[in-house]
Image 1 (cartoon, rainbow, N blue to C red):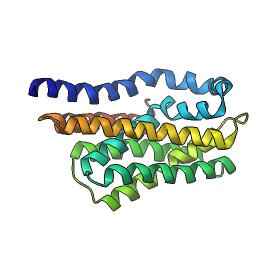
Image 2 (image 1 turned 90 degrees about the vertical axis):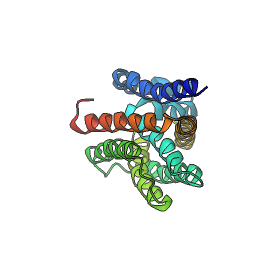
Image 3 (image 1 turned 60 degrees about the vertical axis):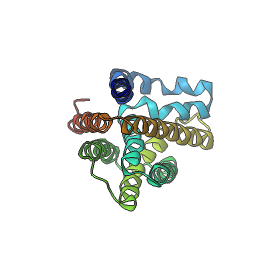
Image 4 (image 1 turned 120 degrees about the vertical axis):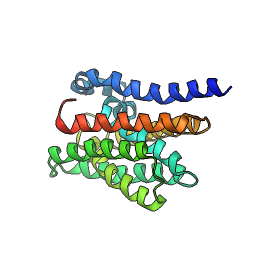
Length: 209
């Protein structure tokens, strides 16, 4: 049973990381054809948008995993903070492009790096500090989604879609964390996964990925 649990924990975290890695080569082509996604509707276009960028995907998975590491009410409040602040950032991005995208991409890359490091270190953060941190990073992610909203999309539907898509990825991260912590080596697997996420963030920062 324990052996099976260990394998399940490794597979759960490994699958999420593999999904992010698998998406890396395809992120640019998908983004280039984003307008084609809108033909299925603004809501669906927004729904799938967070999963199309590996940096967004890894950051949002990290928020869910981190909330489990902290435990208790953080499992709800930390992801909810990300989604709520992201909505504000998305609204700003819809109506202005005054913030240089280079700064936004820097913030997004840093979010992957720092969240991955926090998971890897497995240090329990105060809930309020975690909420402030993820809220700060969510601003960059939301702004990027808002700016990248296709002109032909219905803004309200698109925003609702990418907020729901973000929440779903958070839930996936929570499920990964919940499965892992119930097995002996699960926390170690989470820490290893966090290290890999941090490595991906470093690669995003230096422009290799």
